[in-house]
Length: 97
Length: 390
Image (cartoon, rainbow over all chains, first blue to last red):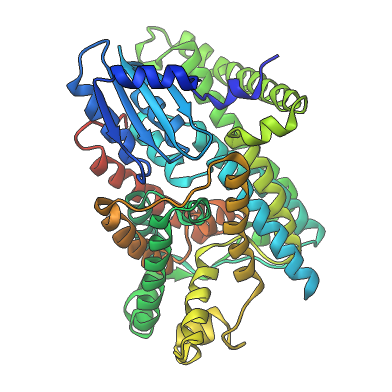
């Protein structure tokens, strides 16, 4: 039976350790704190245009809908995962395909 | 009166919770559809509107309702709606989205609200002139709801419209699923076959999707507390918003946001010594000569912010979010365009797209086209460097 997570289409979540480790490897980090859609989506697309396949783009955000909208906006251009701090801040990890 | 206030508090809080948990955003619904064909929130908005229409139609037919909101129809809806659509896309939040984001702790959206207030006040000052130069020439007929003039009973009419939209949707989905472009087909017979089959395929897919969703919903009951903290499907928000709107329709009126906000502006200005009642728009239009004071719908939208704040706190999404300086123009200009546009239309995304279509108001069909056109143009401008899908 499908769970509610299947229908909300949220990207896979990273654990705290994975999130920290990956952040150190990031090729581009975008500070999107205080920003709302659509600007993080546009910036993510622009950022990915500068990167090579396999590179990692990390967006830091405090806007909840971005955790779903940014991965959907970049679509097949990147593999998306999110990290939720549990305290109203999030990171979106986009690995360029 | 105490009971009405309690209803306002419950409906407002409920709307705030469902808007926040479902990220139920009209800008998102249309912008992301134009930008990269993401129709998830669009479907939620359509579902909420159609469900509300069915329940309101039935309530109206049975006599359980308090009244419609039907401004005169004409080009005001198209023009004002277009300005509103531009404004909400630039601001990054529609009238209802601004409220729930204000509740989540975004300073940016409190500034948006402030400048929507400036827009309402500027409109009020210009109203006597606008009435003769804008509203009179651009309004073509008396406002009307199809529920009141149709020979078909309202409940049946609403079900019919909803069924028709579902059939069109199923046909589009079915056609996409079978992957057939009628122009590419060699024979007319095969075109006819796929045209006939598309709605069936689409309806099947719709039924599968709905039952999968309902199963998921049932599943969440195994761990309701954890599920309530996670983000919700826009369809869940649509169901909740519909329930709240039905209560509001039977007890008070249709759901509106910018009308009550424009009243709030007059009320707050009157509290600091402005004689708001002496302005024609506040005095005789918004407060209908009853005097500038708190009305029940003003209380209701106040509780939308409270509901969103509670839902955000519960989910760990609440924090005081400072504004980035480069986003100040979005809050200021977006707010002004939303405030002024919603008065020029009149009505915002909730009054016109959600409630207006749900009450089958002729004016709102035109205003909804204006709003969506505004979002379309602004989305293309915002995405000009990275490209739009549509």
